[in-house]
Length: 185
Image (cartoon, rainbow, N blue to C red; front, top):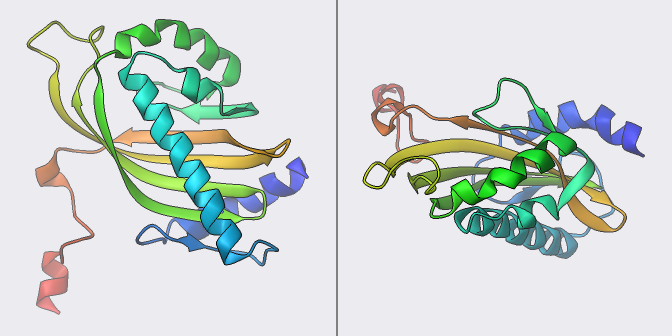
């Protein structure tokens, strides 16, 4: 089953990249009903929210408790993806995150069988206490994020993720507003 998930992943991510709004879109046929998909989506978003709540408290327990044994994530500050053991080791320094303020905006969600992908942006307005001295913690940072979830032993677990820092707001194109190219058409 793991092999099949890996084969489907590139197609799943490609199809999910075209999502707009935050709705379930099945990219392949599936035995999951629309009602079941809504329950799964709500469960995964609750786990996402818990991850970031924990970060602000300087605690990655909520994050580590939902990661898959096959986890591989690529934080924006790392040169290469980070496996589960390295992630566990880095979690020892999580207390530096205490005081971090981040909000999440859901951007998209897709589900197919035992694989789901949650797309979201985060807005960090305050660094954790361990990252900057008092008076220098206020920031205005936006990140694009994807977390890929898999059904493992009957529970939705985070198998992969990636985040990247976005340029300052004036350099971004909003999908909520028409671009200058749209206005000329």
